Length: 205
Length: 205
DNA sequence: GGATGTGAAAGTCTTCACAGCG
DNA sequence: CGCTGTGAAGACTTTCACATCC
Image 1: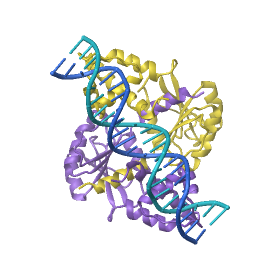
Image 2 (image 1 turned 30 degrees about the horizontal axis):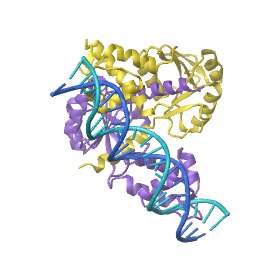
Image 3 (image 1 turned 60 degrees about the vertical axis):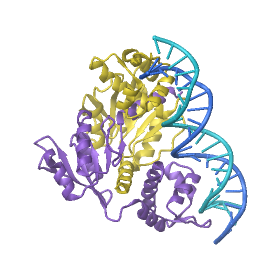
Image 4 (image 1 turned 180 degrees about the vertical axis):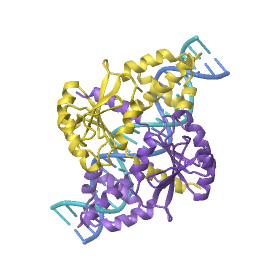
């Protein structure tokens, strides 16, 4: 029962802490972390509470032990494999974006209907045809999927992913997915975001 | 003082209503709209309240008049022009994704540092060099920008956009932007979303 | 009867404020 | 003294529930 927002911020903190460590910084105060993460100091402390991290009033939090706490909390014991469905412009961009970004959370299989893409290897990742979706996911024990297909296909593919054993989906298609509650869905709707920004931009002076 | 979440959902309703109209459907009930949008009926009705839409218990809401209400509420009188900064894989994918998607909200200018991309035209959109950023934005009266540059450059570019008169930014860089409150910022952090999904996926049975 | 419109309740998330400690 | 850890208050969102109307 960990709040969703908190989990999101914790991943941000981890990213920032990794930067800090490479910069050679050992300790950090909540308000410094907050500044970098775009949050408040109280928010940071409360978030860190849920992972049981301890800081000292004197020096703040030790970066390295915080990273250990975060990893223990966020990461499953063994790494997570990710499947990517849809190798259009967006899918390809995501593939290259995630390549080598986070060890332990890698895209290990891609799927597309286009025969030209199938059996090719893009960014070290093999592309299969859609008919193999279930087989590959089950053989590789993949639990997380990125859905980058047209809206018209999203529900159908989502159903298949769910049946194949997928437990979490990042959905880029601008459609609501109706899936059993055993699947966690995060929607990224870039059109919605752009329209939202356009709306609030027009309200600003 | 309209809630941010509501604005986001209103844009979804509009998308759905457009589909319905092309399907030839004239009226719709709140629970039907809710189903398509992945919300609840009460939520839909409350959202529609803020735009002053009226439905009848008999037939629900008339799609066409709802669309008119939505446009009157969401859209500024004249269209919004959008600038895209960063033509890497992601930037290019976004450019092709948005092409012709929404009249009145178009990407009219792109910017990149890569000399090979500058002065080219991708998807009907001219690419300028970064030095022209301020001039083009001011001449074209652009108010909204999409930031698709590496995290290391995001703050710098954000500052320039803000100074050039941009009032809303969709930020794809995994960094918090520190900008004056005259600029509305929406962050889309795909790494965060993927990690969030991986976390909750590993908690599901 | 079944849907809308909406005040009020419930829930969720963030911020405040302060005790306690180094 | 300034920062951490955290109960309590506050702000924001969603859901409930019901009067009202076709």
